[in-house]
Length: 64
Image 1 (cartoon, rainbow, N blue to C red):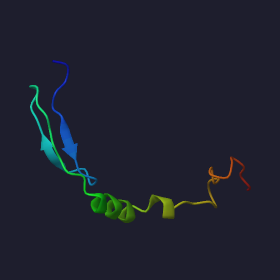
Image 2 (cartoon, helix red, strand yellow):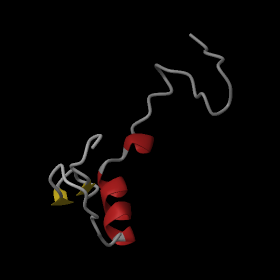
Image 3 (spheres, rainbow, N blue to C red):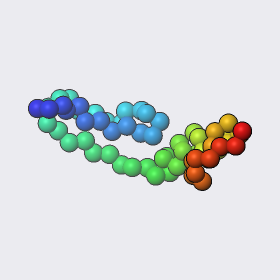
Image 4 (cartoon, rainbow, N blue to C red):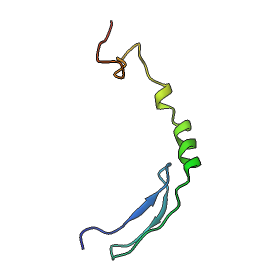
């Protein structure tokens, strides 16, 4: 065996299901609403500081 310990983790980092090092299959259901809620609660795209860092979406120019 190479590794084992297949694991399903939810968007908040909580382990939903896991296995030992023996051969096994892990099944889970993806909750798209939970993914969207997690993304909304971690608003990294809304906290961008264009006054300090360049907007790389428009190029790498920076005005000081």
